[in-house]
Image (cartoon, rainbow, N blue to C red):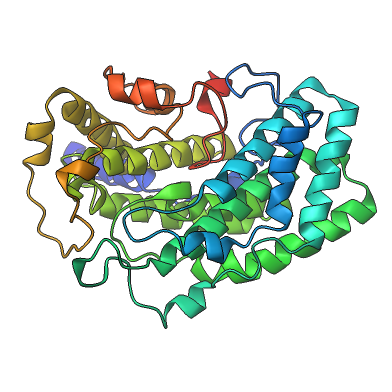
Length: 377
């Protein structure tokens, strides 16, 4: 009898650790990554009163993103004129809402509406159109165009726009909401919906590997069923591409940029898991173990890069053809608060990475996950 009871309890524990997230578990925070935005020195102190700041942000209204993208290649993305102004917009709006500055909030809303009416980024290549284009790193050539980057960066920039809209949602008039919501739904149908539950199971990249756009849109529309479906899907995705020993499929095996891409994927997963917990989801034990191990592997790479890179990869990979002159053997500098997230989510303390500390910006929004984790410490 005791044996049967032990078997039953073990089975129950296994089921519990893989319990599906349900819509009734979901509670959307008012401001995406927090229930209430407060002043935060880690974000910065940008203001719409600055002529440079406002002009830089409004440059997005006229930006020809496809022409900007065409200046890059598979190895390097020419994205500064897209991500720079959008991140600045997020920072300035965050400061305005945190300070409850009515004049700044009104300026943020004005720009948000102007961008919506201009249909910014809508003429970017869609996920469907990518099927007719060659893959990145065609024939292992780093100079080959990467059409996926054009789509991916537009999707992620739009996600950051959507986060800004959530910051301002309760402040919008009916007419402002109507204009912004029309644009958001139009962009969602082209850039998020076709790719919302589609991954190639090779690696884990920006915005929760495409999962954060789903969570943000579900917040905007208050769609708990959609959020629950996304969480269950992405947990399985993480389980598949994060290996038992802590390495990440594709990311960790990018030659002289292996550690850089490993930390990129880890940061994205950590940000996603923070949001999942905030929404009310229980993180599967298997996911937590793998992501925790990945944090330990990042530390290994910081301490002993040779040992980190000695792990062999048996997958099919073209995008590891980096020459030593293009090496980035450090934590990804755009992962602004990966040290905070690592300790918060996994309990693993980030080893001192001097190059990372020199390169990362001390303030701002991490546009790889949509928020700065230092504001939730």
